Length: 370
Image 1: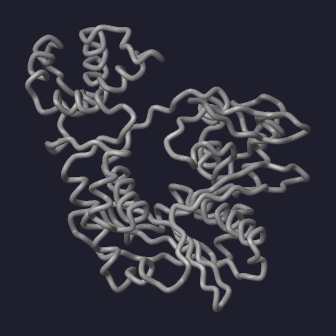
Image 2: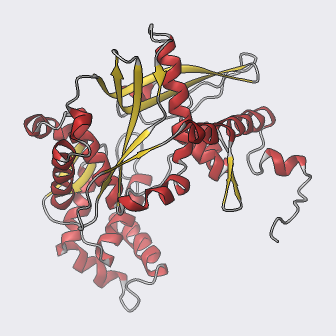
């Protein structure tokens, strides 16, 4: 079940454990999301990608909607019959609607603890009472169930819909559990994508259309060969004009606020990284003379407002920013080159609790607030 990515320098290999979900996961390489993790927290990068420790991250409702919409629209080509046939490959349906109340939060905590206490033989090594008490203590620390004892909470949990939701999670540890609200929202967004005048031509053009397309490439950085990978949602190729259009799909609660998300979620790294990936792939597939356009982000709205999809078009300047780094509102955002350099430095020196810049400064940093 374990695979690795390799950072090549003087024949030294760095191993990363991953969870192989689809073929793309089995490709041993550095990807752009790893750069984002390193930018936020080198120690987390070390824990997750060097030591292979699973990251505890509960998917938000927007993330689940995006994942399911992505599957319906791109993997299943928007075909409802195909979607119905393939749904259970990656997802499991919870017949109810997952609420936002404290009982469902308790169920999420309980499931997280249950996964932690499950061994390689798929046997849970602690009792339900032990796990429930720990989950209950966690949620009380969050200010929930403030006047309740764990015994009465456990008795209520047994008959509460959250209890059924928890059992569904336990029965489907290798799949994403989604409720009918998420399924219906994914269906709505898919149909919107296929019919809205803003986006429908993306899915029915006469261009060559590659979807969920994985690319492996070698990134040369300071004479260092780094094996990289990227999986693009969509690549449209116009062979008449010799133009390639990389496209990525996003689902957000307010798609008219995407520029904020572009900075917060570091999509500028994705923009530059995928641009390099597609150029390398084109060069190696007899399309070296094709122009690779900067990324287009097709952004769908998950809110009840049902806003129309929007296509955010980036420029060569945005690609350059993602590669070299840039200043925005007085904050420096590191680019691909600087982050790769940081990963190499941290790997060479086995230092993961400080950035290279702050290490070189001897821990003395001038305050840049005026």
